[in-house]
Image (cartoon, rainbow, N blue to C red; front, side):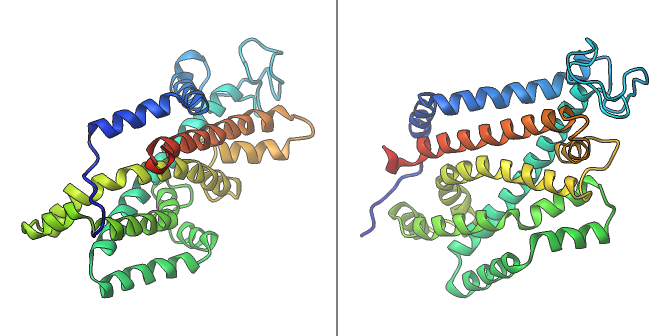
Length: 290
């Protein structure tokens, strides 16, 4: 007989929160993420410049030379402080929305496949295998060719097109394990419909591993978005994202290195912080670690 596992309650989440609070690296990473997010939200209000306004008197000025431009300016005289934080805001928004879309699809697909019969499960997971075999960049190029380049909807569709595949596999494996537990078998014996069984008993017990993977999905989406923008397939000028800022900075690296270093530093800080936070969540939510 499989060991019964009751749905995780408030006490389990309180213990996980306490373990996460004891992790200094995770606390520091969360503080840095919140600081960067707060700065990106307040940037339009603390600077007189907008992301596309031009200061003709100060073109390509390095940081520290002019009090009005804390991070310097680019070749067109646009304030790099505001453009970088606007790029952070847009990259975070796209990445979080794409992660939510991919998680929603992955949870639904994986839970249904794991709870369904063998034939349905096999068909659904072979479809996932087919999508896995397709080159990611090839899918993105097709989507940006068929639809408007730089469109937010197309970018979200491109990022979410394959972002849910790993989530579906994780959820499917967890669901197949959970459906043999005593509390799920008891619910089935009481005649609980499959939809209610998923929502009340299966999905709540998946939140731990899914939350950990979601934290690690956001940095992946940031990298994907930056890569697409770097290739010219993502966010288009005059709008700023970390990807197209790094692209412009790479072109001016020898004569104006700050144009590359400033957005690259924010990108590296975000990626490291999100990965540290994901590791901390994994340690806090995995009962095998305690």
